[in-house]
Length: 312
Image 1: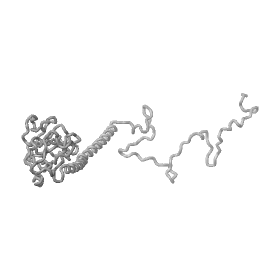
Image 2: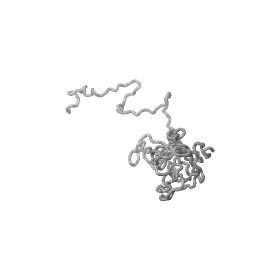
Image 3: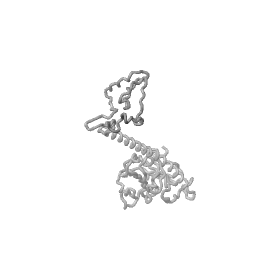
Image 4: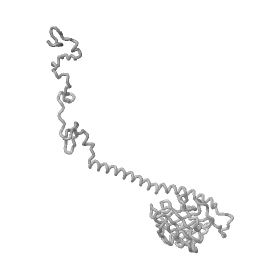
């Protein structure tokens, strides 16, 4: 007899099988076979409240995509459950590009609308508010009835104020627009008002009273609508000056001779009383300049009331 085998001389050790679980027999459970301790396959689900198994799922309808719920075996191995849904294709890239382009265009459209709204309403409101302040400053500078020390028959010599200060009133009856003109043509000067070129003539004087203004809806937006014979009025401290348009033209930005005492002739001596309005052209751009020339038709004392061009 081999050593270690149980026999008459070597009885079985009961502790050798102490770690094995004892599977007791149950009344409703038949004796377990050798595979009883292996994982069992769960039974098919049943309908709630019935003892019958669930019926198979209905076949897919036409146009309906079936996604495998388990990995699918292919020649290259197993394919992920979601690989078909996440793998980029030409169609998915095209849809993504169209969606991103649409979002960009919508955003750009909103920005354009906001800018247009500011140009139309926001900037106009700012200009109107500053024009109201400039008008009050001009009235204070002139006084309620003018300078009492100067008789109407002896006009006071005009002196241009400091840059940024109001100098005169500008009226265009055909456009139903009017502004207070300030001294100076820097960006800060003409931000909210037309500006007078400092070296040009003053209202009613021999020479060229030249004014620059932005091409926005609050200022010189409709300047291109002026026609020959239209009136442009300047309001001074004691007089009204009525000018009549005689020429409108478009020039390059470097053609500064348009604001010379004799427009287009920088070295000529002035003999006429002119007014010139300048602004950017076309609208929303500045690679040209729109120029309007007018000549003094008459002067009228303010004591006689406003000119008839303003009454009608």
